[in-house]
Length: 296
Image 1 (cartoon, rainbow, N blue to C red):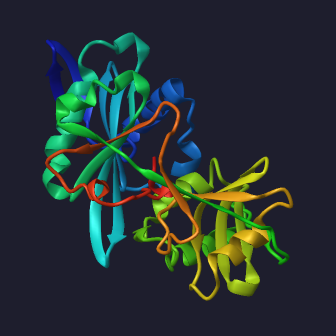
Image 2: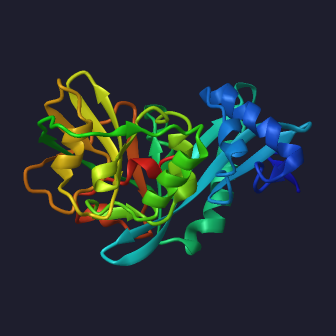
């Protein structure tokens, strides 16, 4: 569709990834701006309509894009549909022309009334930008606790092996029994992380038929998610995959049972959390971590 933005003509594509003519140019834009290669995710078959990049083209070249991630969550036994604004990219040669604003307004017009909440993570350079659209700053929390390594057998899942991928998906659909605020069958976004950044951090514990996704950094562990039937204690699972040096763990989700944990306001470098002010905001009255594997 031809559109005019500040008296300049562009072609607008509502979902550049699903459009064969637009896809590769969109991938080039994202790689240029963020250094991210979306091609493996697309080729895996897990990149579908849960991620929708609203994109402007000039002379058949993608020059600006704003992505919408549709996440289904479970909160207090209710399914919630949340929309995350993500992967906001403008080619350096096209910045300052109002393209990002036009795309953001377009995306909000489309999704504001279709979702319970609209949120985003902004870097420090744009913290004064998103309030112009009605976004308010909000605080996530992080949960930490001491952790002792324990004995137990586990193996690393290999994302190049189909049976391991199928096992991961099967366990993901069982959800995280230790999480208060869970992803509800959001396989596509979970797999984005697991075939890229976290492909070497996925562990299967046969004894408990559980998958733990966690990274070790020096003597601390960050646990992104756990998928199991809930027939074990969280410390048992984390202790098995912990290194001998591990003494503490931080969760990438909100624990059902927070006893033993210290909850602190998240203090991520170059990251501010925003929620659209006329929508639901569960962070206002709850100490919540949005599941890390729901990010895109």
